[in-house]
Image (tube, rainbow, N blue to C red; front, side, top):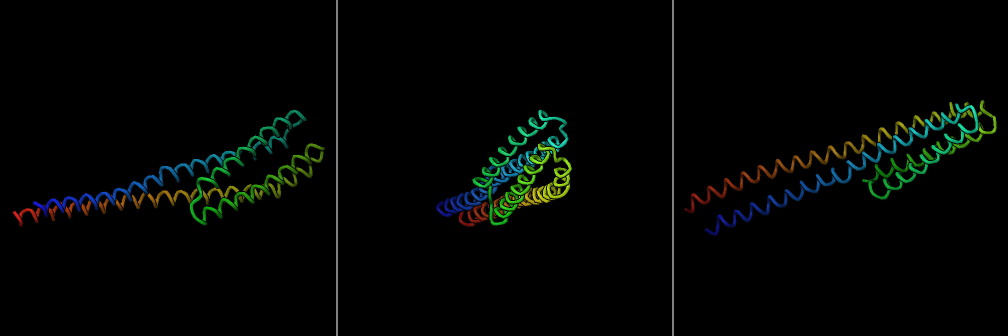
Length: 193
């Protein structure tokens, strides 16, 4: 009677340990990477809105149109900074993730500085210079930022996918170990009576 009971306790211990590992991986995906991917989507959308508001500012035919575009742009800048701070505080995983955040922050600061210069030039009637800066540096930096965001999303997708595969592997391992342990318990029960 004691041997099958010990085997059942062993089954419970092994299964429990593997289920804890599965839970950790699933929690990592659900609470970390899914939220990180959603935040990156928000960052991407906000940056796109900033680009649209800058174009709208350049195309405005009067001061009121420029002012309205500038207000929306400034709101987006504040939102972007808030989201990047949230990401830095809660969503970073590893050195590569930190590097991507730092690169995005540095490039976006440079883009925003150039965008501010574009709006300043346009607001004082130097539209030609503003369009030249917009068409050159601002568009080039915008492309680099978009490419970096794409890479950043792919990095987080890979982390989530890998964690999901680990969880599935742990479930398969637990299933196999459970079958072996139950089979062993049945065999021992038959042998020992």
